[in-house]
Amino acid sequence: MSAHTMRAIRLHEHGGPDVLRYEEVPVPSPGPGEVLVRVHAIGVNPPDRYLRGGLTTMPGSQSSVSLPVIPGTDVSGVVAAVAADVTGLSVGEEVFGLLRFPGFDGSAYAEYVTAPASDLARKPARLDHVHAAGVPMAGLTAWQFLIEQGHDHPSPFQNARHRPAPLGTGTTVLVNGAAGGVGHFAVQLAKWKGAKVVAVASGAHASFLRELGADDFIDYTRSRPEALVRGADLVLDTVGGPGSSRFLSTLKRGGSLFPVFPGDFDPLETRKLGVTVSSAQVRSSGAQLAELGRLLDTGTVRVAIDSTFPLANARAAHERAARGHIRGKLVLTAG
Image 1 (cartoon, rainbow, N blue to C red):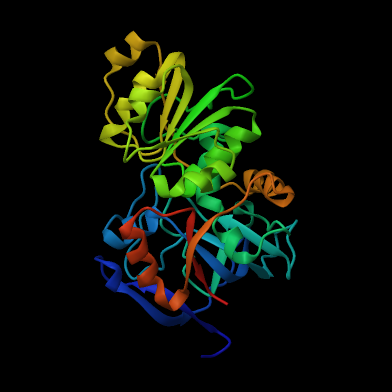
Image 2 (cartoon, rainbow, N blue to C red):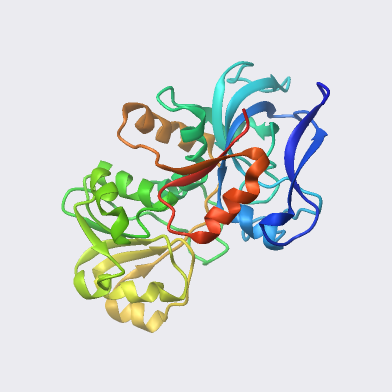
């Protein structure tokens, strides 16, 4: 392999994990406003699997990709080169980021990647590259749902702009799917804001979630959270989908249900209950990652890694994702 080529995972066809091919490809060159990052670790996210399965345009995105394509959006690495118009980042700095999202042109499953400088933040010194790569999409999703959306882009899922609900002492937040990537960040961010947190996950994650700050834990394999919880201020449902409406009964009047994966809700029912249902589409933000990075550097928020895989074995990472019940994040290592 020459100095002008690198190893990357590419898709030449859509399908199962076996279509992920480890190949030699040219090293990209940064365009205006971009930097070249020598990638050390890559976070694995659901959109990577959507692309592999055949989706080529993300909701909320104007861009579409064609095959062959390098999947992935989450990286941690070292700046290898910068475009002439980039200020604020220098060669040799450690950075992490969610690249070009919403969209499928992040091209993160590679040894090098070009990245808009605005999508990157300096890597928290407290974190190694593996843990930093587990942050961007999941951490920003929790941040933009709970703390600050940070942009005015219309949501592909609703007409109204998503507005996070106020959190603080005296508020109760239920997090469904609390042990997953978004969920485990949401538990910690809600606690940081002073809320009481009820975490819902399978029983195997009880001690893990209590260590993250959950005040109460519900094992959904034994109990129905909607039968146990009343008067919550906010539900963040990281599972979402058709079953999300069952959480409406857990809310007090004036409360909010935030499904990460939108489902079907009856407007008459939500009006009668006096609650709000709102969703959003996470977007790249180096500035918000820098804010989250400060919490990571102080240990206020931490990253859980379920498992790691070499970039060459991305197939095994996708197979692990398909089995579900993930605690934290899956990460690929690229050196």
